[in-house]
Amino acid sequence: SCCTALACSCCVGLSCQCFGYAMTFTKSIATRVLYTSIFVALSVVAWIFSMYAYEILEYIPYINDTCYEGTCGAFSVYRITFAMFFFHALLSIFLIGVRNAKDIRAQLNDGWWPLKIPLLCIIIVAAFFTPNVFFTYYAWAAIVGAGLFILIQLVLLVDFAYSWSESWVAQWQGDGVEEGENRSYLYALLAITGLLYIISLGFDAFMYGLFCFGDCWW
Image 1 (spheres, one colour):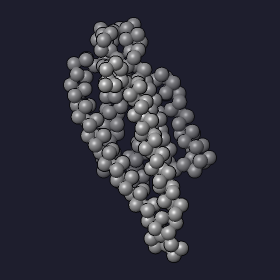
Image 2: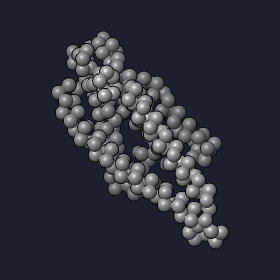
Image 3: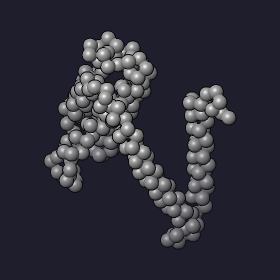
Image 4: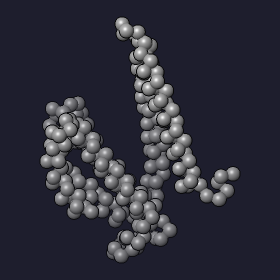
């Protein structure tokens, strides 16, 4: 998969340019799309390894000595997520002090994909040769970090929801508009609110069906 990623990364610059031309993407948006794609792809890989890591790794020398059938999946997920964390930590260190895209170091964030993707693959491979004891401690640190991350995301999400609601309420009430109130914003706000509630309840039902067994329902 690393070889495939390397081959794909050689075309990233051209792909970004084509997407940017065809869909009027800015360079910043294209960069975010690429980082998101990498995150989603590695999340899928981690999910696959959580179930089939032992079957995948049992034939690889040295790794099979630290990969036990009961815990191999969990430790594989730790290794992949640690590699992502370490990769982005390195980038953040190199980008300290960068304030705009004109800084020469900003190119490290927006470009250099033929180097960054192989580097990420190397970090992932190195993580699989790291002893399990390290990831035992990393797991606890990850729990704390994940909790803080979720808390920050909740604050940002609530702030976004309030800003969105206030903006549409202002449009509905006609603040600063000579024509007066525009009830279409009221109907749109009610429709979006109802839709989000339905989606939320749907995800709740889906997660109960996926993770809840036996006496969990009672």
